[in-house]
Image (cartoon, rainbow, N blue to C red; front, top):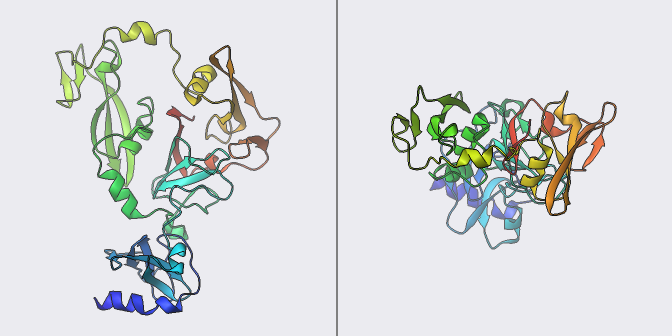
Length: 329
């Protein structure tokens, strides 16, 4: 109670706000943990311990007077911290969607149907030049850890979950250890499963095939002799003539995008970062053509042109990236 009263005493002294989460304020060694929670900082200016809630109707603001709780209806509340999650950065390149995840903006002010994950130990910061950075280097996550807790509490897989063709990205989106089915083709994918595990704070995934003629049962979470009811014997005849939506199949990639324009190919600085795909609709069918930027230029997904600067998505701090369910290579 005393802690909260000290926070409220500074309301009239507020001068400015940072508008970010998890950044320790030197005035009173506190940080905003979420839009209505505070957290103490350690001697290294890193958030630590359990968060404290502001009184009902108050929001957390960090400014020249320290971290304080202000009435939600006050003018200062418009500067409340932890409001930048899911908002595109100033260059409209990306938006942080979680403490360790992000989405592409593609030159717009809206996060697109995209799932990106930071490398192990890195966090997403909307002001970071490489999207993800290390807390030990002073880069703190833009989104609240409270947001991560809310999203991970759901047992269902989000609609933006990457395809099973990318086990690591799939597990990073599912955020739950266990075995998951790969597909419903009785002759191929019904015999496979993805094993998701959390290793040193980073989600890992590996695809396995059941031995012999066994099938993977999502109900029993193991390989069984009887074909599960979710498996179909008619899938192969249709999938054999349908190209997989990968960047190596521009037409299928554009069919997944369902929008005309130029789109990025991948995250490898030496190869795919220099390429882009032009998607267009021809006689009612989506077509795609892959191009490579001239010389030593890279494709910039925000400006949608070839540029000399290495895009933020082509950084070692980025672990995986998908767009409309297509894994960027």
